[in-house]
Image 1 (cartoon, rainbow, N blue to C red):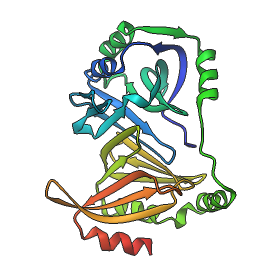
Image 2: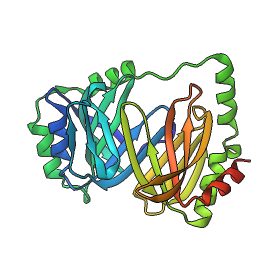
Image 3: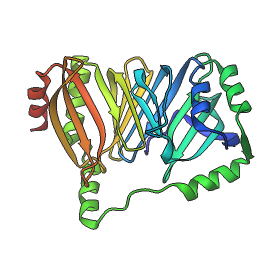
Length: 275
């Protein structure tokens, strides 16, 4: 996405060669971690303690059920451990790459919040090759892929990015900020999923990107309006609780992101804001 992330790559990089599930299971025990998931439309991140991991060998996936986090192991193409600067302080990150995306899922140990020694020990004990920073940066530049769309769809995407204030999603988040609503936000894709509750406080629009910061400062969201082609609102039951859910699709009809609010009464409110 176009807005700066709270951390940047620096210093030493490890390219892990051992099994991914054992590495994820080990670092998950490092206390609260900064979990950051990405797809072409959305970035969603939150500081959360990870639940016990479930390794589904039949599905070739790992799950952290309480966090709504899952990763397709079959889609993983590379796993790196990097030393980074997190808000000017040194931190550590585990970065998992899938086709065309070097950081589909990042798991970051944060100073004064995470158990840094445990996280570091897990990374250092996992089989890995050492890369120089130049090697890693060159690999990232060559690895990354961005979607290519037809000229007609590109023109429509450019228009959506040019007028983000007109997008119904902007109005919905403005309404949530005004009413102090907590929303369940979920990034979805065939390779990674992540869900977290977020009470939006600050909204920014920049270069066609909607940026949201939660009121507690522990979670964030970005949505690229150029990729967000269609919205659909549905009423659903989750464990017998009523939710109004909005699903965001790209121009090919693929879902990328969901937001949900408690209660079916939000259905009429959100449809009115879309109008």
